[in-house]
Length: 131
Image 1 (cartoon, rainbow, N blue to C red):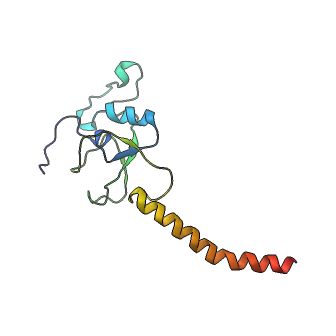
Image 2: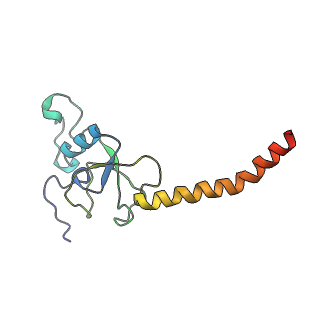
């Protein structure tokens, strides 16, 4: 893949960019890459002066390990070589941001079972002492 990119190919318009809500999705889609900004430029069609990069919008790149980043968190105004069209998505609440949804569900089941194994005997012993 070439490192050259077309204007607008930032992680906010990438299918791997995830944000918290629908408003952030819209902002991530229209916010320009910081390299395309001019000082004092407005976004939201001039209705609100929030700076060219829209605030900025902070989200996560779902393929952050593949782009060799220290963490999944990033700004929509940044660009990464994994860019693919598709637009930002709303991330799921809970779980690790770098695992697919199926992996998180399995992890929750394991966590619940381990919690029951560890806490169960302690709670049973406490209950028996109170009787």
